[in-house]
Image (cartoon, rainbow, N blue to C red; front, side, top):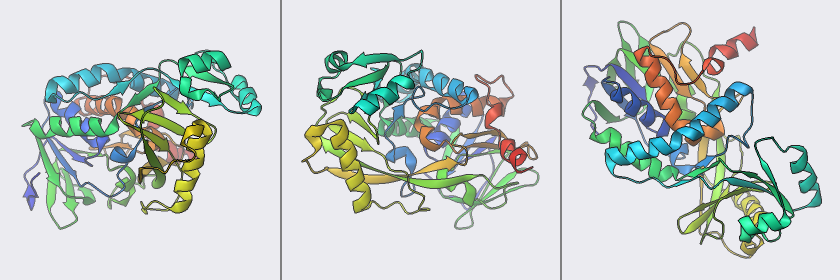
Length: 365
């Protein structure tokens, strides 16, 4: 990365260098635009701290959000191939489905009541055959099209693609202020100035800290703590009553807490103990083991848990790509596609009208 005191300009300024920002930059340059990415790796950045779950079948919402989530999940296989062709990094993608396991009779009744037409009920023998590590489970729901991606590898691949493209300049800085005169003009934390014809705010949990925006972005940091154990006793993601387990190469992730503590990204004894109980609830064999790792991340949580995507109603040179809440990894490739389409005036691959920042103003009225 370079750190100029002033940059002469580009077609697009992307504010934020996490997964969303990198995906927007990669998609924009693919369409022939010149891109300036200004972002700084921050402690607690969600892109590297997440579990990488692709679960639109479980994280159900309004019809528009459901459709976007499903399209985002199904975009992944081709996207992973495209990244590998561009940078040589093969990102691990698990499309073996996700299980919601019932460990009590009450859990069985609850999951059966909520069973969607697209999901499959597993009785105890079927559950044990599909996932032998869940031999204590009384039944479960199988979502065969969901899965998980290794978000750390995804970040590394996107970063490699963006760094290698001559149409993209990356600057290690944090934008503190944005103004619009003849162009978009951003100021970094040490006074550097960056200009472009249009700007994309993709700063995650820090989006609402940027001064000069036409309106407040209703996004706040929400801490999620996670732990990991060595080994991989499960082959697919499993949701339990209070959390989830995600298998990775050589280790098992357990998550995640939801804590409104501002930008505090430390882990706590209470949070780790809560996650240990979650782990033991899903996999009793973990009950007496000590986690090998613990960390936390700051989700960019919007007030209605849906992303903020699209052009600002009063400033057409400003585009939002933030507030993805618990689904930032899931929505990364499709968000990049949508933002690039907006920048070029092309047809959108999916409808994002429901995610406009204007929805919050209408609620206030």
